Image 1 (cartoon, rainbow, N blue to C red):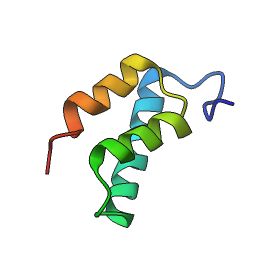
Image 2: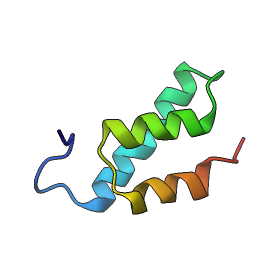
Image 3: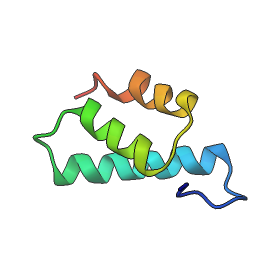
Image 4: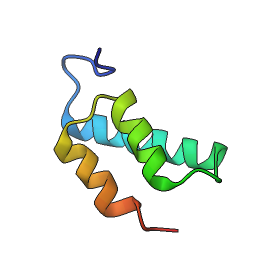
Length: 62
């Protein structure tokens, strides 16, 4: 099941993913960013391209 509305654009979904990632990182600072990115990718049914964007831009940041 997709968490996105049929009219939701990729930008909206990416914004939602970023908000979710930040919230999870705040709640679970001990979890690795890779784990949080995977969780968000699955929860929001991100495309591979959207998931790669998160990995490229946020996996190694502290």
